[in-house]
Image (cartoon, rainbow, N blue to C red; front, side, top):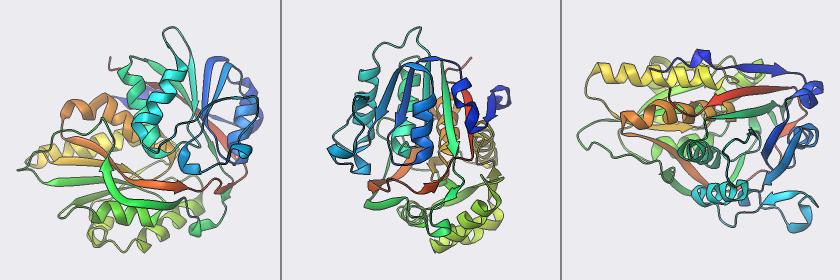
Length: 317
């Protein structure tokens, strides 16, 4: 089991953005939120690159002028990751900083795994917390889905037909996505991971309200007997919790097939994929799983409360 507590994270006030160390390359996913654009404008880097997710459905005249952009044509996370990595070029000896705030979950998972695959050892990750969500518990993030729930391309592992299926679910605001994931496969045993402490006290309550709306029978018992908690702003604590769940399951009987579905904060998404990179892929029968989102809201938040900086190691030592 990896000791994730050794990894470093730092809380920053918005006024401290320009004090973050200079990097060779900075990458951010373009969207309409003030917090994403403020970090992009104030960060220091030789190259600043916008990744423009097609799911946001921006028209050409809505995109920034005279700024480097990667413009994937399809929603497919493998191709979006390929396009971005091709644009970055060789990364040996380069310092890389990624603001994950505006990233689509499936691309964030694919990108981190892709960076690990091309032997990137360390990356600085930023996440900016909002003051609040625009419509409180009514905030809608994914505006449409394909109805398909599938594993992340290139990260699916062989399933043991004789073993039970377990879903480790990062619980977030989007009850529609929660419902799609839980109901896509019969006889799933669900282990919810709730973001607590949350980004703010009201956000935990709002997340619980939205999850309850999913009306998923599989959550009825699991919500009480199988739930776990991990801080919404700590990827390393999240990875530790996921690792502990898997270890307990493996010790309890036949090691199950495990699906990781982080539908919570981007920071917890980072924690889930960090676990997969450093531990899960070596165990086997662990696959990240998400619904396919066709379109996504361009802006769902208000303000910039604070910034988090994480020093993420992508290689086992």
